[in-house]
Image (cartoon, rainbow, N blue to C red; front, top):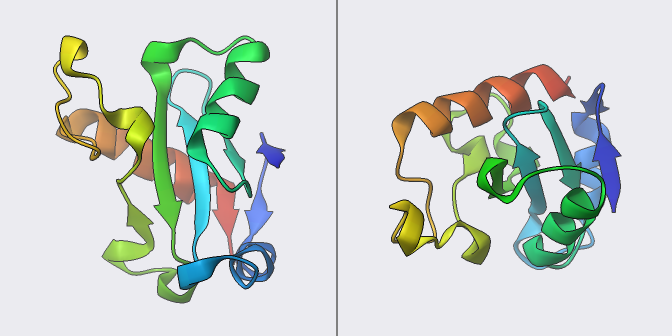
Length: 114
């Protein structure tokens, strides 16, 4: 597991993805702090890590990164069990709020470099 506060190269993500089934990298983004954790088997582990380091639950969203699709719209997949929050209005594993999706895209775009 790796905390990304500055940048990570797409090459590093490709190496991480090569170890995972489906060649993806799981990540949890803190939309308040503009950081993310990558490279773990479960989004829940990444979520726990961020919570233990000062993040607040309401700002954490699980995504999958597909390094082979870097630069394309489906590079980021909004799908994680940690996103299922019916009491907060998110009733699916996706990120239903477009504003939150745009925040995630902006953070990932800043943190992941070619």
